[in-house]
Image 1 (spheres, rainbow, N blue to C red):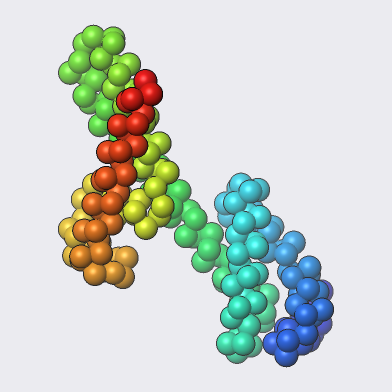
Image 2 (image 1 turned 120 degrees about the horizontal axis):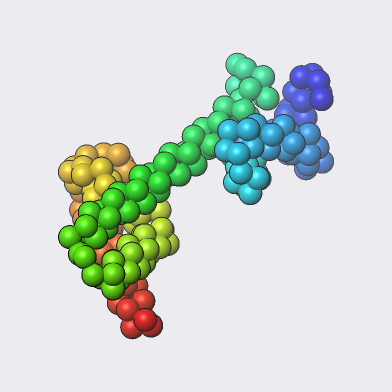
Length: 187
């Protein structure tokens, strides 16, 4: 689609024309998906990102100033969302590696095979529980225990008060403790 046609669809969408919104989504979804896929290399995530980027763009269309083409603006939104996904991915990988290294170190001290099996299972269970946490609870755990950041810095990063960080850590700790207790009860 040409920039002129796209600009016209953007103008009509801004005016509330639902058919223009639909046409805009249909024309932009494939290119947005391809960009996200090329960055993330995961079709499901790319599909989510493409849809999220279009939703964000449509919500922000009244503030679009046309300093850059709509396609460039939409690509910037898409790239920002992809970068956020990649940061989350890296944080999860680092946490996984940390937990693996931690339990590998403890395993060296434990020479009995049964103890190693129990520790491997414990590491897996802990990792699984932490990954199941809502982001607002998982992030403080990662920042505090993996990045070893002080509460004040975590509060700044998350743009919340120190008290909120403490509360979220407590909620996360309680959830982890309960979830691990339930797993132990099942085993």
